[in-house]
Length: 422
Image (cartoon, rainbow, N blue to C red; front, side, top):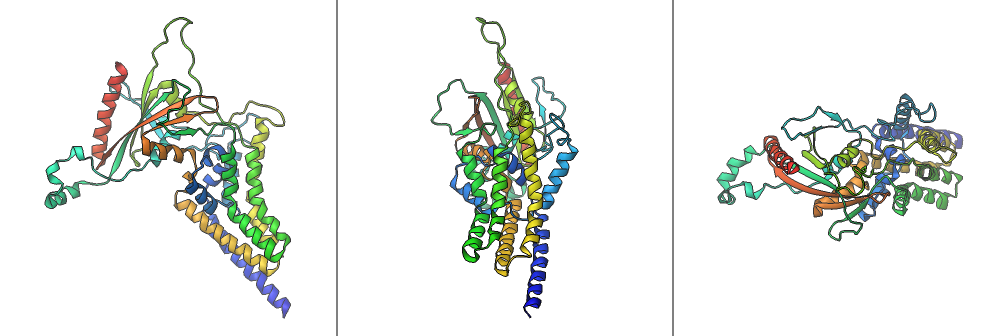
């Protein structure tokens, strides 16, 4: 009788585990592995709310094997397994390719051909900036505010609220921190306590269920719950170095007055989230569109960049086996640990749904932190590990239709280009 009950328990466990695994693989996100390989960007926060969200929805002990295999296939097709300095990381989990494009607006009224955005840091920041939807009071007749009939006539003309965002980038001329401007540390520098805290916090759920299994059942299967955090810490220790903000090249001879700084105005082609303009020194703006944050691959040796790449890719392989091997291993576990493991997997899959559909890929990131500061104060400083200080200033205009947004954008483009000509 006991044998029949045991077989029935194993069959039910295997069936439920398979169903949970199927549901989880359908919703697991590639950005979870981007987080794994770029901790300084994706765990760059000290905000309590963000840390709570990280602890609730970012465990990777669930069924992420399908996404891991897809990520490994991308790494293989990109040639990264071939050897040192082989392959291209753009378009992989090392360095995503968003597919976004931009154009350069020229002073003569023309614009360049569409160019590829390799790094969309500031575009990501601008997409995260949110405001309360409201009409610009200065553009409406004040006599219509309290006139219900007039508002009813106006309402059909409002298709959707959008924003025209103008971001001005510049280099700070002083090493003194401006008290009126929040400071954010860039994501291309060395790891700090905030990054380690974010990674450790992300596996709070797995550690909790491991503690339950260990204290209640005193089972050796407790060790399985340690693996998700161990793999993350290994990836953290082997993280690749990233290209920092480059300093401007010195022009002209010593003693001569500095040459005027060439300015550029770029417009993001995609207007689904609003109309985005980015202006500033050419050498500064373009590096954020190009290779800022791209993995550095020059250092050799056991602690060199190639070793870091291999360690990072091996952690992805480990996650590809974590759930399948866990399902097989817990078949031989007592019924108590089996139930705890299934409950954990259900919680993990639920968390993955919240992550996928609740904007989890932005929680705790550098972009989110900068976007929050810009939304509140319209000015922020970004400090790089090289000591470079970038000042970002934001201007925003709320519009009620795409046509109005285009008109406002063209008006701002004209004014900005005129100021560059002075």
